[in-house]
Every structure is written in structure tokens, then in C-alpha cells.
Amino acid sequence: MNIRGAIDETMDKFLNDTWTVHGQIDMVDEHLRHLIDMSAKINSDYTMSDGKLNRWLGWMQGVLCVCTDATLGEMKEINKKYAD
Image 1 (spheres, one colour):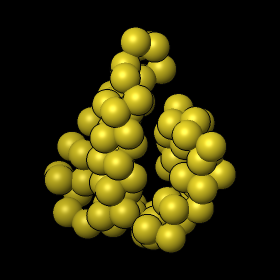
Image 2 (tube, one colour; image 1 turned 120 degrees about the vertical axis):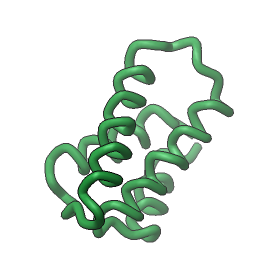
Image 3 (cartoon, rainbow, N blue to C red; image 1 turned 90 degrees about the horizontal axis):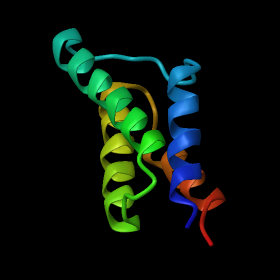
Image 4 (spheres, helix red, strand yellow; image 1 turned 45 degrees about the horizontal axis):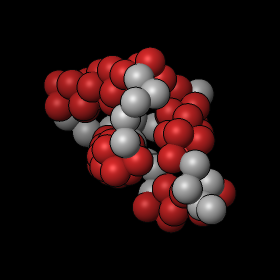
């Protein structure tokens, strides 16, 4: 799987307002700030293992499903595009 591609598309859709943010603003802001920090770390560290990237992708997509109107189905579609 091209994990970095799936992460990039997930973040692009989030940053380009594909999904509407909802929920308690304090909790959402904290999670979304962490999501952006994780994305920056991924883009600057090419030594991360596939296992770690997969865990981070899962966390990032999970946060977006909880904090926005993104759906699990949308996340699955993104991941299918980048499957080997």
C-alpha cells in the first residue's frame, strides 16, 4: 500500500474543507492540531516504518470520522486507491 499517498489525500481533503468540523470545539481543536502536527512529522521523516505509518493513518482517519462529517466509507475509498 502507498500509505503516504493515502495520508496525503486524507490530509488534502481535510485541509481543503471537504468535511465539516463538528463537536466540542476544545476537544476538536486539540485533535485537529495534533493531526496537522502528525502530517508534518510524516512529511519530514522518511525513516518511519510501514507499520507506524499504518497506525498513524488509522488514527488520523479515525479522528476525522469523529471530529468531522467524514465517513468510514470515504476513508475506505481513499485507502482502496492506494492499495497495492
